[in-house]
Length: 421
Image (cartoon, rainbow, N blue to C red; front, side):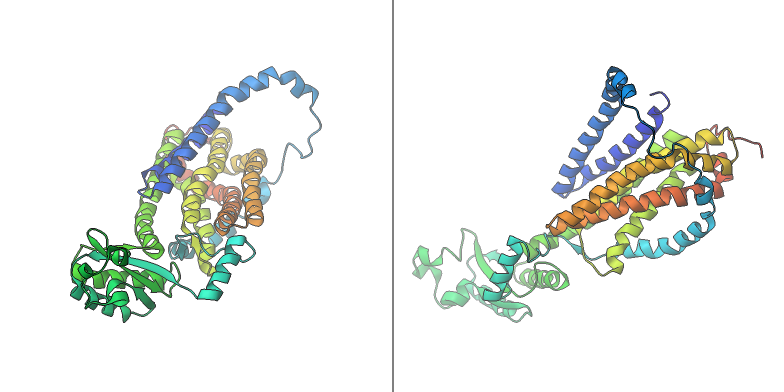
């Protein structure tokens, strides 16, 4: 427990504070998600550090009796094999990291539920409705009640917009020449509330996308010309448009808080300025490459999947880098950098591989078995992200540790690195 506590505590802390960053989102789903993930990490840490040792002591006789020969050799000699690829790996990552960073920032996002596959009940029903009635996405505009002439001009201008097929309003359905006061309330209640007049616009755009969002902006701009800020827009396209503005701001905040929080934890854990940079660069590279794939394959990405993966992959898979680096610093005090890296890879590749394979396989299985496109895309991102993180930790991280060994030694407090040949 004494030997493993620093690495386990550092891993739990980076994940804990990484998920805590989600709690600062204005978008409520992210805050709820962050709170529940934080509780899970805290309870898992307590279980591993308190209940696992106690359970092991209680059941040690059964553990001894059920031992068997290892199916996989306990010692590996692949450290030297991985070291040979350090220069090619560095060159490949240097080539990929810039387009990956730019690509992931230009990915087209979906903010709603996306299109349901036609082999699902929801997808088949939606397809039949569209075949029978055509595509229509309603948008509701609420304007101040009592100015029929101005409302008629507004409706006429809105009708001239592309992608507005028709509208349902008092001036179109009953007529601007008939004062509402002359009619029975049952005939006007669908058009008026106490303070507002309702105009329902039937649009031909999708629920979201460039055309849908551009139409929302046009409708709001026209309404603002007539009524200033005294109007309201309602509808799925409007909601998703507003969600886009909120989550884009949240994304910048969450990514910044995540990186800063993890960097501080690594700074305290390793008492080094350079180790946080090396570890974050390693894992962040895998995150950027993972999230750039949808852009280069021209596949839109559900935003909640991007949010989860950009935070979860960084916060969860940095544990692999911490385990590798913690063992490396221990070995580096007894041998030179090259020998320490070889020994570290030989000793830790199995434990890191087991952890990465569990997370990766769960993600891929979720992607293959779920009929919900959002869940399936999150599973694919999670599976691919864990696999990429593993490759980066066993290929890129050793290369960076070797290349920057002298810098690391000078920027680490009481490094006590081995000085021999």
